[in-house]
Length: 320
Image (cartoon, rainbow, N blue to C red; front, top):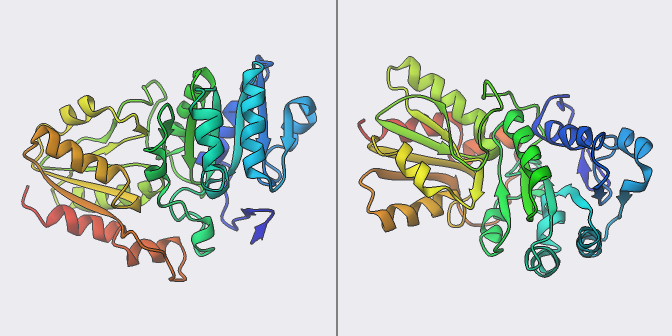
């Protein structure tokens, strides 16, 4: 169901990436007086407690995305740490010029909290998908972009954003994602080994995590457990750490719920060419064209070859 720009999922759970991030930010308000939250007719119910406790630090800006970004820039210039919450197309696409000129160009400490990464909002259609946002991000210097794979990375991303004096963009799903990290004492800017393995490596980010981990379990049961690496910070990409992690594998499979021509996979294509890396590279993602199919999230993943079964096939297609 779509209400005021945000879909209310029947399977929403209290613990998901969205809630983990927002709860961390709101908790910080107990000790910080500089946090200001803006929304655009989104997050209904999410910020009720915050609005009651801090009415002077919250504004629903309505359906006025460009104005919201410029308003946030003004707040940041007066000393506020601003968080803008909305569905990704309404926090980055419709207001690209304002994000570029007002926030990134001036390096202001504004965090764009984008909900609905990838095809999280299937089957609502292209207006609500975010499968080319990392391509846009790569055209915005000074913008740190984080794509967590679980609620733990989301909380660490929130702490990073709270401490950062630069623009940050965090892309989040909100479907009750399980946690894959056992602790929160890691650097969100560095790729993370989620599962040890060898022969092949699966490199991924964001909302495709559940398909990746399901594929890992199948491969492990078949005696060919791959190395599994999440890349929470896709910009700037820590190429040194990633190359080090991949130094002993023969085959890298990059999986993402994003266009293949402008996402993490494309970054790794460039990295492989620049460094003359000897591992074979397979990209799994969404072909760069508009999605007209009407499917739920799992159905679209199967159709576009980014389901757990497709990941297993890709890893097994090249001998370890």
